[in-house]
Length: 325
Image 1 (tube, helix red, strand yellow):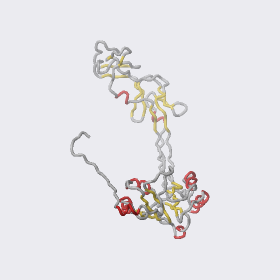
Image 2 (cartoon, helix red, strand yellow):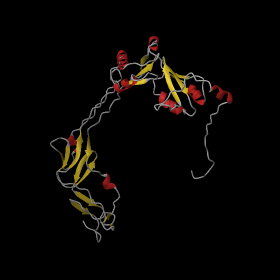
Image 3 (tube, helix red, strand yellow):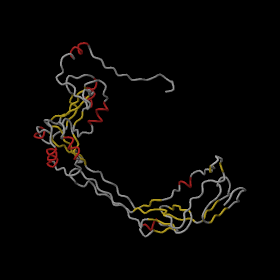
Image 4 (cartoon, helix red, strand yellow):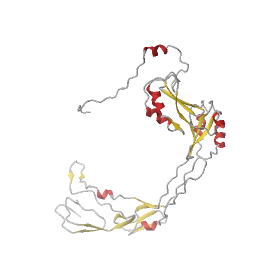
């Protein structure tokens, strides 16, 4: 980047012998398919038949990760990475077999498609058998016959029924468990603001007052300083058969009063935590307290700035000239 060291560049070059170029003059029995834009040639494509999956590379250039990002999502029972590398290394006379999705039985492989359930039961795929264009009703009936009841993706079924089935399509997915949450409190003040470095106030004319630092945050009686968040029980995960995977540990209940500390009470709605006196709200563990006394160890000087606090202020040192409390 800075011109240091020898430049390093990896260059991949594809070339064909003269006799191979002569062979290209003959018509190809299987011309490369077009991409979404008509007339645009794709670099590679994959297709499956009776559970066997093939890779056909049309133009040099695809990387291994490009292919794997697509095919490793499938419910493959067998995957041959070396076969994929071979197909990508140069032109092949025929599509290269790289994987297998085993059908449930021999009869299923002879059907236009079959349903493949992953080992963990969390996904159901429609896999091409002898090929063809299934209807939405056929796909739904196949899922029902496989016992799939939950997580069915209706848009995916509609999309799969619009064109011939050439590769596996995910039709149903199980749901992951949602975690429980213990009872907690949402704090409506930030102690981080108190811990930040004090900054002087900039006047309207651009000058800086180093004595007027950020004032202490205080509240008046009746101010809502926090909100109680009741415990929530999560939902267990379910596979595509609708079966519960694992029980969820319920959230731990804690009464709202446990979060209301000194000079703080729970409102009638059982949610709001309200200050009953003026002062500074602080956290004591999970509890909220209102502090009516602000103690300063040392002098009131440039390290503290002017003190503006609605409550009692105790200063162990002196108030230096030019500062106020």
